[in-house]
Image (cartoon, rainbow, N blue to C red; front, side, top):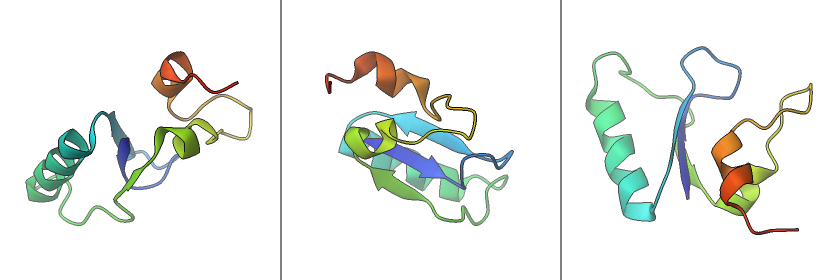
Length: 72
């Protein structure tokens, strides 16, 4: 699972790759952090979906997933 706050390309974009519980706890901590008072579009996504995310140049948004994924 991948938890994200903000959108890729935004300087505030942050993510965590982990289990559902880890992602949920991380998001709760980010919401409580005064630096991120309102994380826009915070969400939890599957690894398979997040592995398809690419920047316009073709580089992966979350490179750790490419290393961990077992999808052809």
